[in-house]
Image (tube, rainbow, N blue to C red; front, side, top):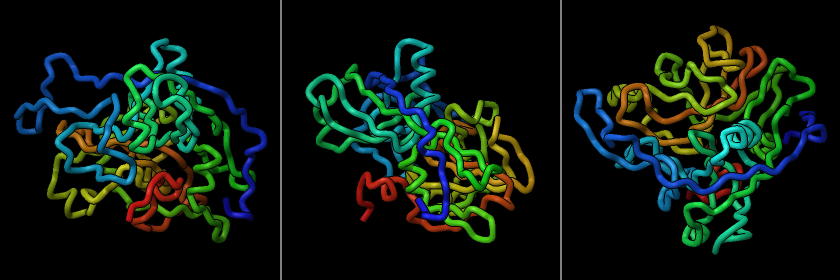
Length: 289
């Protein structure tokens, strides 16, 4: 964390929450539909992804909503809500059962499940059903001198990793790219504390023209003219800083998933574009070279 920025880290409550490694999920009937009506059956959500991690591409997989790393959930509904609402990006995770017991990982996203990155050698020993415990810390985090900003899903580790700096009273966050608000799709109706919002990525020519097809899992993303405090609504003069947490989709309105991390008025929150602004690097998860 930048020395001049004062966080309330000592006030945060740290708690243990658990979930189990999920079986991959596919909807009844199996088919997903391209915008032109063609149907496909593709993998992507839940389970253990052996070859997709944060830092890898968000577009181009022969999959749908590809979730990097390990997806976990709790079978008890209220406990699962606690897992979702209390867990923050950058929290430490530990395998509590099975052959990989004792292995450490790091939370990298929230979708239908909580997403955790483990080293490739750990994945080889993990099994569906293994229990993962997370040291959940970050709910309620704030900057003492910048109360107009609201932070979501931000652990102290992620707060340090943002690379925030202050310029003329404005907090500046490095991001890998900026997205126009007009291409944001499914998820606008959801509580911004829970789960993500998807891109409307069906126009592949537009994605290429804007450079969005170069997005990586784990990229920090900026969106202007949106207010993500309570939901995800259009509001001129506001900004949201988000995280790419899952891969592209063939379904209309369901492109890569963008999880809200910071939101506030533009006079208080700005950004600079740095293509290397990815949590795979800033949280020391893996090298991208």
